[in-house]
Image 1 (cartoon, rainbow, N blue to C red):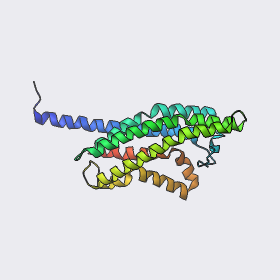
Image 2 (tube, rainbow, N blue to C red):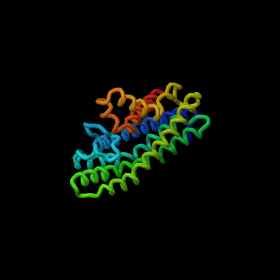
Image 3 (cartoon, rainbow, N blue to C red):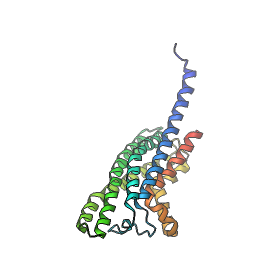
Image 4 (cartoon, rainbow, N blue to C red):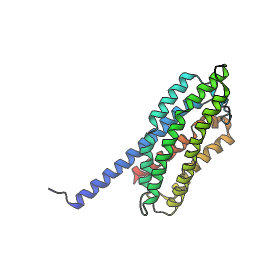
Length: 228
């Protein structure tokens, strides 16, 4: 016996809402877990994260880097659920902005997972050079293979943020217009502003800036999905 349309639609809406909330929570978990892994990989009490020779990694215990390496890589696929959530929250009329954000996010964070998967090797190389067991030229080669990948992710974040701001500001998404201010790029800018204004506090969040920004974004988006 087929369900009457007036009975089926509320159930379908409830199921859709649960899926939106679940995917948002998975994205939030991914941002927190990858962020924790990246913190273990890269945090240095002395800062100096812009050192071209990665000197900030010289004193990080290898066991800590190893734990961060596996935690970040194994958690990174949860970003796919998070970007599905963001795309679905953006998807009204027209549908292309949500689909574009989802596709860009998937591509960018798959490349980003490759980038973070090489960080422990960079750290191990820095420590081997410091102890005279490796040629400094090896570090430059590894860096040349690693750093372009994070630049791909940065370009993706700029494109996602442009679509995000324009589409949400138009009032054609599930989000209130105020959410246009919480694009990934603007959240990242806020984190770098914290570092500039308060280096002591900024040193704690800068190594995980991308994940911290997305943790805020996924948390806000999931709360809005739950209240809808």
